[in-house]
Length: 619
Image (tube, rainbow, N blue to C red; front, side):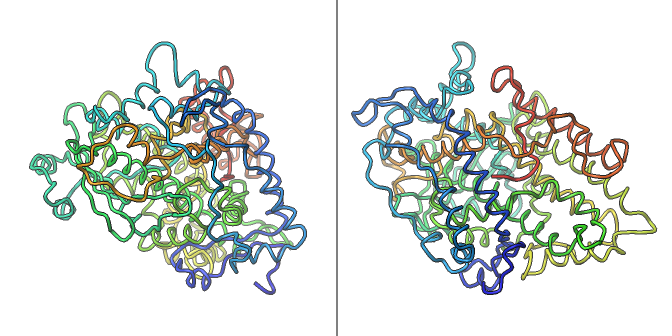
């Protein structure tokens, strides 16, 4: 990258992405050194912020013949720390050498991570279902709320899904875990089986296909979660981490609207090791856990990072290249006034993720930054920008409110209710902005900088974002573009709420980041709970997920979406609270504030979570 200006953003060249097999990946920004150093300092501070939650892992467990506290099993001899500070020192010593870590693959920063040293405590399979509570901290009331003395007990509910002698319960509990706890993972993965998809699935499942599924499909009650995308992934053999590619069939009860998993097809890299599991299979719970694993990996890298980080950063990159920022005597572009307050930190965090992959990334089988970029590229191929908007996704997948409402709207798919609430609030905010900013006398078509932004975002050498319009001429054409972008940033904030990860995600058997045996067993293999747990994440891998989740739940946002000094503080546009765009911003904040109160009514006890939802994508 000879000649790169280190004081302004740039990006990994598209030619280089093509060279490493990631040509369809949206543009990946590289930050100026000052911004990167600032982010490293902030992330080092977060290591300190989460210490209390880590030290709250004080419950005692007996695993592998050793009795110790949870923190010892999860983190071994101690938490790995100091990586952010060490990288900061390296950058300060020689900024250009750090940029080469990304572009030239030097120093192993994006290479295969070294296998962890043997550790008798953090390389153990768990031995009972209740031990999956090992990652529930006693800090901020997490463990107490997850194991209440009376009423519904999540520990009992989650543990019941891990009992090989009760496959029916495991089948019933598969879908509610996704529908209720998939908010931070953007899990709009369910599809109603329709049209030509039915014949293709029937052929895919072959002799395992049951006649009852024909009737379910005819009645509009057959659904699928198709995650064969992971046949492109290479297992991480160094760490024994494997992401199965799965296709899961679910049948809906027409009265209760409940979905029940009925079959899982599992394959490995390249479509090898094909096995099909049904509820009568002795290894049925392996099939369900394989499906949960692929759902988790989808949620981490595709649902969350691709949709909310990668596409968004590429759009911001193009905006920075084309929309005037007010410097040099040129007035700041109004779309910069809209975007800038919510565009902080994202590019720098994504860059740190690439630089410190084995430290920052959760413990999936995506072992290097290059694997990650190739997965982003594979997923992006053929995807239009607007395809991933929530309403477009639901429509494409045949998911309707009527089909998922029993007692109240969307109560059988509650995360959708939240997605749509944020989408509608974002659309109202953007509409007010656009209609006040652009008039019939000055339409978007006359805004040369706007047109340049959209073109740069689509240009392979800049944003490389697929599916953008060739131009934006009217208000009605601009509104969907901005709504999609602002929605991605705002919706990402829900991932930081305490209730998003706890207790559903931190009970890691619900959302395994990988399997730790690279072999797909025959469906006829009898599984005890002990043999099932041999396939599931081991103590150190669970610890990696704890560190990942706790960074979201137990560190403060740099800047909250809801201002701490009132909804009318820190307005984005000149003119005060009565200015139409600021009035719309205040209304937007009020919707998010009300959502936070609904999602996290008491967490921690007597302390609001209103200021835990960040304004920008920080982590």
